[in-house]
Length: 71
Image (spheres, rainbow, N blue to C red):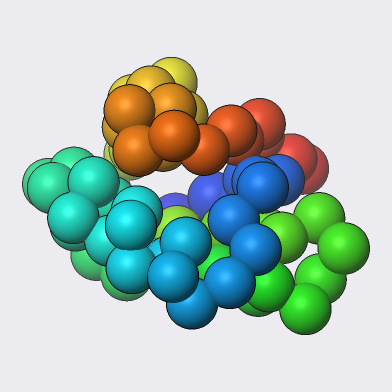
């Protein structure tokens, strides 16, 4: 299982509700969660196959949010 982490500006439950259809629409994403208590508002994505991180960032941008990959 691959794990990808992104620093985001997703701050609350309403924000999570907004991005849900965008993230759920990425076929390669098996599971995802946002830690809104973390100062970096970390989005963690888990997948059994490779995920195009640029696609994740583009989908979040469509939803009105920003993201960047982290190590």
